[in-house]
Amino acid sequence: MRAEAFWKAVTLDRSDFLDSLVALLDDHGVRYCVIGGQGVNAYVEPLVSLDLDLVVAVEQLENVEKLLRANFEVEAFPHSLNVSSPGSQLRVQVQTDPRYFEFVGRAARREILGISMPVADIADVLQGKIWAASDPSRRPSKRRKDLLDIERLLESYPGLRDRVPAEILARLE
Image 1 (tube, rainbow, N blue to C red):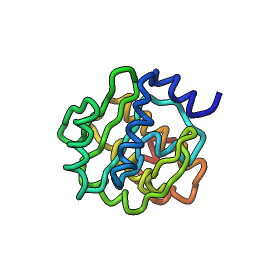
Image 2: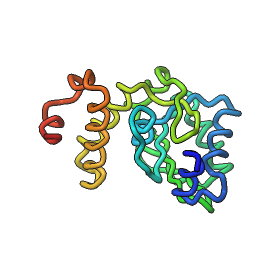
Image 3: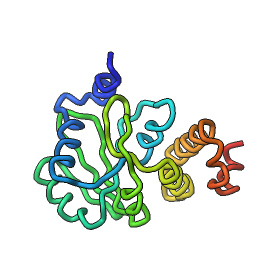
Image 4: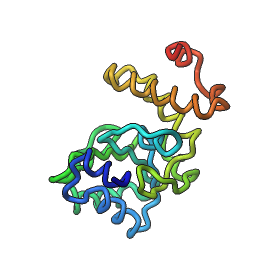
């Protein structure tokens, strides 16, 4: 089974939500990148997840929201747009937290489970995970996964260790 078929099987993506979403963004010239756990998966051995976290160029965000609402189900939250489609368990979150907007300009295309998408630079993926792991409003289980993702990145890219705050490093040991 190819990686993309496996991902679709895991997310029960019977509606081709992922393919439709990526095609919609690419066809409309949307500048975006993958962050979060799937961003980590682009750099290290992948872990399966039902989540796909994206950030869109700030100047395109308003139009992208309209485009997404015209094609998918969208729910707005203070720092994200949650995008879904009937027939798929894939959960897409478009980050609207301004700290992430600069990531788009440093992104490059990479493979994530067999699909080519723009992915944030590894240092930006790590920074996003540091912010997430440090956010006390996140569920403890999510923060533990963020720590695991940081650890996975550091195992493969030990040169990034100096970018991680001491309090996060202490939680890894």
